[in-house]
Amino acid sequence: MINIIWFLLISIGICYSFFTGNQEMGDIILDSSYSAYELILSIGPLIVLWSGIMNIASKSGLLRKFSNLLNPFLKKLMPSVKNPKALEYISSNIAANMLGLGSVATPAGLKAMKELDRENPNKGVATEGMITFLVLNTSGVTIIPMTVIALRKAYGSINPTAIILPSIIATTVSTISGLTLDYFIRRRNVK
Image 1 (cartoon, rainbow, N blue to C red):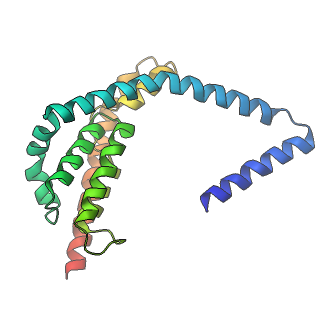
Image 2 (cartoon, rainbow, N blue to C red):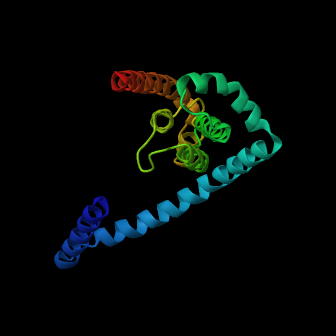
Image 3 (cartoon, one colour):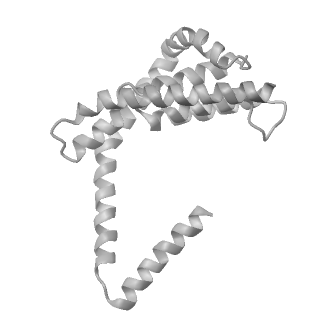
């Protein structure tokens, strides 16, 4: 539905500029595509680098060790999840999110959801573990927001790392709020 709305809005804008003879739409389209190209060139290497580091960490067993550190916390947070592979992917996702690398965290998050779905007796309906993981993933436990720092640097920020402290505060508040709400909703549903 949202795709249709965006398509209609863009089509109306293009038709309006065509019929009124307004050149601004064409200029905006060309400038935006060039800006997007420059942005991809500035952030692309960062994403490739961290994806490679996460892959090396996975193959070397470092993620498994990180997963073992997080397992007691994750088992209390998601007691219904028994799949160790799912917990490993969840830990990998959390590690990438801690570094502010959402695009690197996405593949691990998708694999974690697939693993969680294997345990799901009722396909098509999210389990408690899936919902809790989604809340944890959405709140984005970010300690160092690398992508935001790279964006700020690409756009000429004087101090691109000034975002770290506000990011830590925001992610702490959102994670605690989200997990607290998830906990109370789960308890209410059990009753």
